[in-house]
Length: 170
Image (tube, rainbow, N blue to C red; front, side):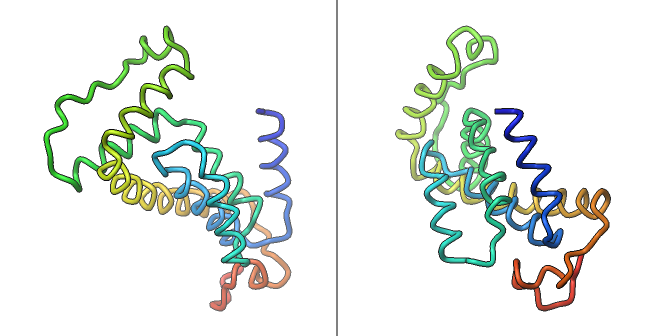
C-alpha cells in the first residue's frame, strides 16, 4: 500500500498540470472521505469526476484515501455534528487507543458503525461541516506545499485541467 501510494504521489507531482488543479482534486477527495458511512466514498468520487470533468482524477482518488482513517473521520464528524445538532450525547462512548489496539481495527470500525447508525442525522451534518473544513485546509496546505516544492507551471497554465480562467499558473 505504501509503495503504491508513494508512486501515485510521485506521478501526481510529475504530471503536467497546475498546482491549483492538484490541490483542488486533493481537497475534493478529502472532503468526500468524511462521509460517515464507510464504503461509498470511492463511488461518490467517481460520480463527481463524471459530473465535473475538469477535476484532476488522480488527485481526487489520492485525497479520498483519508477515508482509511475511519475512526478519526467518525470522531471528527461526531465532534462537528455535536456543535451543529443539539441533543444529549452523553451515552456515546468512544474507544480508547488501548481498546483499539486490543480489539483490532475491524472490531473498532464495526463498533463505530453502530454509533454512526444511531446518530446518523447528527453525524451527516457533522460530516458536511468537517468535510468542508478538512477540504479547505487540504487545499490551502497542498497549494502552499506544491508552490514551495513544485515551481514549474503547466504549459497552458493548467486551464484545460481545472477550468481556471484567471491566469493562475501555479
